[in-house]
Image (tube, rainbow, N blue to C red; front, side):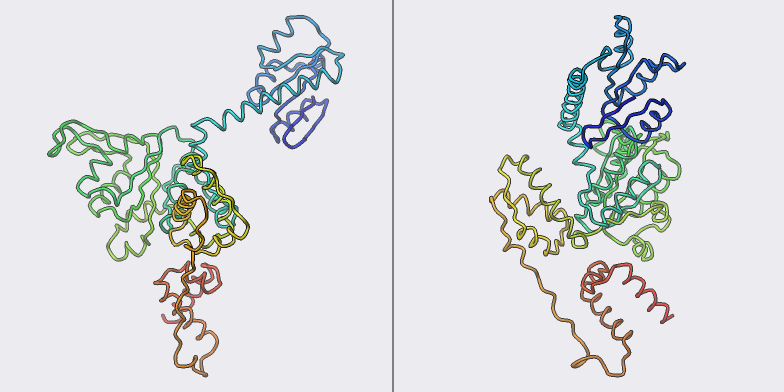
Length: 428
């Protein structure tokens, strides 16, 4: 059995069926060339083997037999071509070229399809930084499970993008349904989520399904869940525990199979401690927390994001792409992007409309100098006390934003949190 992979130039050859199976299990091959005469001394069902592998690979068969029955068997089993031995190199290469070109065209057609374009746009987390690779790795691991996931992160970091990636990698057949909890009036949220019966309230002239029903078998994304009213939080908790909903004005429970992904830009643990968020609901949705890194913590991802938005938005706006120099990208990497990816996207859209990069808009706002006691720290302070005082000042300046404070201090957020925990234990 001989196999060829065009994209990487990989070529494997063996006369042993078990070795061939091991190769096919380890690698994908665009094309497989099979000598059917080798099966004459085996009890293996070559037609069954062709059917098994022809779904994912083109198969060219070689044989000394020249009868039409064999050709029909090959085609019915999914073979792409049958060549009679002895055959010339040119005959083999013509068949190989035809198969590979056809498969290439099928791939291009697939990638250009509206469904696949939407899937790529909704699921692709662009970048190769350690932070975004960690997020992608976690998503790949947890997506196939039914567990509830809480996504934390600043506004504009791509929390909904991560939620869509979780859904698309989950294998769930139902729809991905998103709702922004802060955009729904409190008195309408129950009806929005669970639906209502006709006459359940003033204006309910007909029954209506809620988002849980629309997301049945799929994923419901609750964006800004920290803005959900406390009364609604209790009802959501009950649904998560019982896997049933009851429409407003209804009497019957409706079972639902919905995977919940929630997102917030608030610190729900503190909100629950302060009584602004139900503690039991927090623990119920916080089975796994996925933290989306702000753009300022992964500047190496800015160039690929810029190229992505330039290409995507130029097509949407029907305007030409703008040239980007290395200096342009370097200056974009120096900006803090407080609005994160959403701000970057809007900036690129504005640039495309203007036909240039107005980089003067990205002047850095310099932080005010830190104040220290007198002309410096007291001489009797040890180094640890100086570090602690300086860290506390930076945290105060950043209004408690640990990620920004760590960036200004030149350390990782985990290092900052370890320091804060150590200092807190010293004061206990």
